[in-house]
Image 1: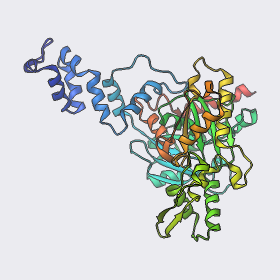
Image 2 (image 1 turned 45 degrees about the vertical axis):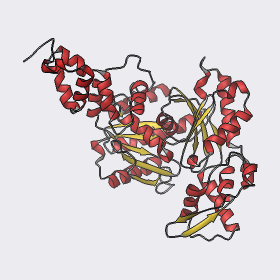
Image 3 (image 1 turned 180 degrees about the vertical axis):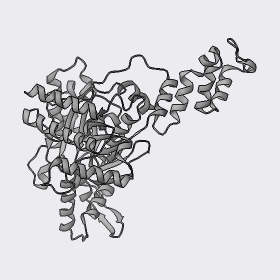
Length: 439
């Protein structure tokens, strides 16, 4: 019977006990109770109840709350001051179709399905995939076709979120044109394969989202070089200045290889060296003090046997701060980050200067133990106390896959794909408008 003022026999049960009973129901059954009467609708619409259901989702509750408050509008980011009911958000998120995620970098690419907990595969990145002399469009088309084949998915069935690797750091017209050309080539290749909608976002921005931040400085240690990227409200501040350091993962692996060769340690491939770097190497908080310690440790590489390293364990990561050790003329990582912070401080973009005091590390090499602590220590030593106060360096929130998880936050939003994706029709209309503006 429909009743507007009673829950029937449940009236005799204390409300807190009643809510525990309701929690035992499935979300779909709870949603149906809203049709019984106004009192039932009021009770089962309680945000705490739907927070409980959201907390039992594969995505952590804190990440859901961050994304729905900060990212649901798409670009430009707008903080949602009046939060929708969590019951509505739960219902919308359950209907989101999901997307294919392709996180490309300068070395390796991670790809997978947004509803999964982690990437399902890896391959050479699209900037190096195939014949380097072929046109960018053809290379991209070949690359994305390979990804779809490996995932056994038809391009026309799912939207896609693509991370755009950091390149052309300057704010010059030539750099802007090169970035625009790459982004247009990505869209053209995917729409040429009949992908319904495309979301292309900077890799650094996605890594920042994975750390549940929309503003900060992302230090991305890539395959060939390291970039220091200031980001305000999800937008890269190229006018402030993106710093680049010519030391990346490949340099660290190469330096460890040289040290192993000097000790007559025999290995068959760079895979062995990379495995040792990832499992034995770390960054010393105090390099000089570490030289006086016994740091010997061993690790077994599959099909290659046991290897023992000593000083090489921390000397490898030290070249990020002292590149001259490896014979390189470059800024240390701490110097590049301090320079970026000084530029952000001098630019006075907002009254609140805390936006650039969160530094997020990204990239596989950024996972070296001790790196975040060492960088934070060095920055406090380099910067004036007033600027250094409040600076915090965060390790990669999801290891080498941080950008992939940032894309996952976007593709599971209650407003996806409408708020973030571009359709083929919108892309063509935008391209025509851009051409008219250039004339």
